[in-house]
Picture 1 (tube, helix red, strand yellow):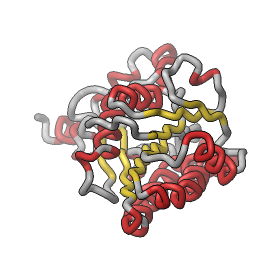
Picture 2 (cartoon, one colour):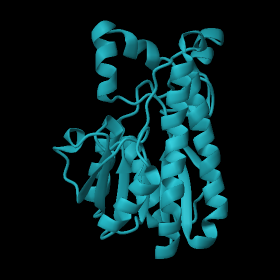
Picture 3 (cartoon, helix red, strand yellow):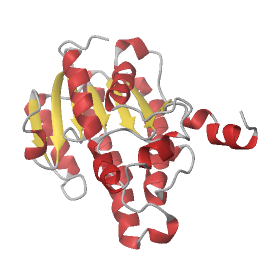
Picture 4 (cartoon, one colour):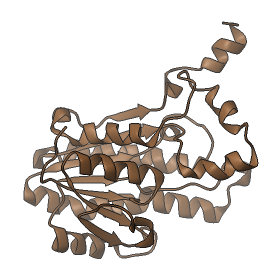
Length: 251
């Protein structure tokens, strides 16, 4: 899965999955342009370029133009940035709904939409959206889930309509990923991982590197005939209900 000389944009580069993406793409030979809200988040990353902007607040058309002027049109765009706060319907506020859909869906679509003409002009490329199993079935976080399901629909639109320009678009759908975001939960409740992994047939959380390798594959020439798919990277979560098998059928 070599990407020597390819320009890859990775949003949310300073996060847990983002860092794994930067490492995977750099090791494959790509020139990685990291994007995040602060330069500090990316300070220790080995990047060919850094772009600091806020998906929720900046003019994303201007951001796309700035990126292309500084680095050239991307060969690969990895839409990784996102977040969630409202965990259940009863605890999700109107402000959280607006912000989570705004960041996870609207802003990601707007940035992609602004970069699509540049990618088409340069002859095509690959786009990978980091979605979630929450876009496939409900596991909580209702506003986030709605946004991720919408992102998969937009991914299919790009796959169908931009294929004539040589652009492929796919999504990966991680389950629970063992990033530093889990640290505070584990500190408060050491048993939370064990209770979570009982729902995963593989009996564990997904590692950031596993998500990154799936993204790398979809962005690489090895996936040249694949577009419009949503690939779960979820240790078997969406394949079936292992807790049901164990509890009801008494395996």
